[in-house]
Image (cartoon, rainbow over all chains, first blue to last red):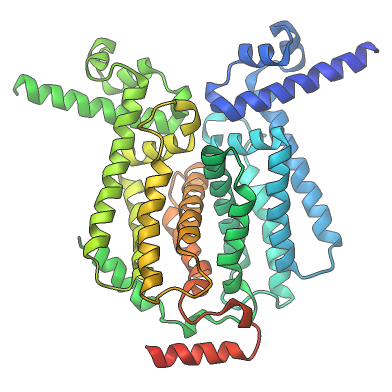
Length: 218
Length: 218
């Protein structure tokens, strides 16, 4: 094996170990010693490839950005129903989370972004929301979304809800039930999103208001 | 001030400081020194009240359990529409998160539960799901939910989605947009949950029929 090939192999082992440690302990709980130990390298070798914990975190986030770009590219060439595309995007993300430790780490880091103070970590949610928002906007433009659905708000909701589904699924089943949770989301949500649904024909917002008043007055 | 009153005041200051530090750094990133410093007490005083970080975390989680019990009690005496009650429960939780640092800390700890290895931290999501699930089941029994909606899955989804909304809202706006995010969720989701909505008929002519059914039943 050449020196370069060996270096690349070491780098990959470190990224993989860092992903596991970030998922387990979060950003602030992760120690470089534990990452080096788990990767089977010296701390010197780790520092040679990644001078800081921030550098390691950036490597994870780059993975997520690449995944976003791949999704964007796919959406550009897509020719089917764009509401279906939204559904399959979340399904694929769930499947990839199960198979890709660095993506799991990127999601965990996004949750903790407030503390990392690194510009490359900023904008993770915004990028993801933009990708989902563009697909939702196309669905709207093509008349595939119900009139009352705002594409930007739908995108923001999907990103937030998915973040929670994977967080709770990770804690309660090690992601074992994530795909089922995503299916549940669409079973519950999709009937309200499809063109032809008119929410104003239901019991109306005034009943919710009165219930809220009732609840807060106690 | 009596010795007892002073001790209680110190204890409260520690819990409040611990809540801030847990929200900022997470469980594994929180240090007892920082908590003592922020509470303005010695480490000795901190150890007198809370012998470990786990004991502090348990104090936060007890807060969340109390909130769940209050919700359960409220649901027992409620007499309105139970889908409305689900909506107002999430609205109230959002409002309380904005005002209660220990509840914010409890939410953050629930996200990290995997690492804390403490039995009192286990079951946070399960308890919350049970409370929400009972309300959803009552809504179903009373014919207020659409036929295709499974109460247990709806409860699991609401807990997961809300967890994500507050996580993303905390990172992106310090919870400033949480209430707006919760309203968006209901705007998008509610039309699909109400009795009378039949997802398989949404785009066909029978959608007018279901609206008509609803009109006569109100």
